[in-house]
Image 1 (cartoon, rainbow, N blue to C red):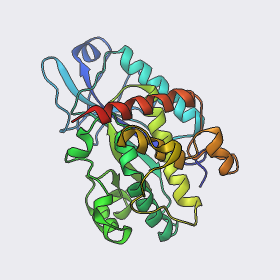
Image 2: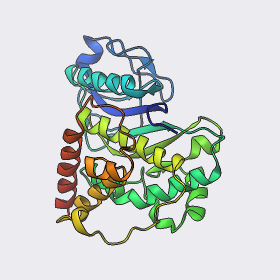
Image 3: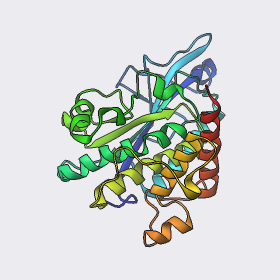
Image 4: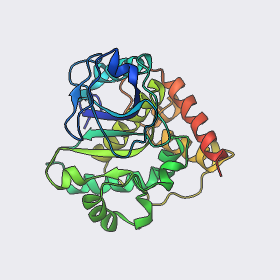
Length: 283
């Protein structure tokens, strides 16, 4: 499966100011009953989410995208984020970003098992590029690696969505997509466009590879090993996706998941490194 051809979507949890409602016509629908946001492109809807805490003139507001594809879809995400910031949407510690990536039901079971293993392998790096330890310590996006192997992990991921990787929609036949729930709240295009491409890359590796990653990776060496665990694991993740000329040469020029320079790759990588350092600095 080529990342340029695969579908994706994003849920951006925000708190919206009174002014977005009074002055700009924002209406927030119920859970899974979103209402078109008047200042966003067609298909972008606002709905309430009980996990978002909002007080004192702010409103719980999850922004849900339509199904998107390719560079044009990623450019639309960047534009939406610019508008949200312009209209005063903000995030707090209760907010998160969820990324949905298309997954056809006729893909072989081995590919899905490989995805579960890849997420376990990259888990520490995924948490590190959120820039906070609250995601892995919370109840809404638990780790996968703790289950020990894909055979024990997959049944849990099929029935319980509160993991870094959520397979419940696929398992129940609700939607041909998997969900990554690991990411922290943000309205930054650098972060979110980068996170989307990370998820596209992990899917691309799972569906095109024949060999699986190790469930629990070994100690880091050489250029991947940095001062902190998060910084090291972020480098492992970017290396696994072959983001960078040296890594890409090893993979025949391929950089998994990277579909657009709407935000330049160097800017994304530098931001991930900054976030990983912030993660490492937390107790």
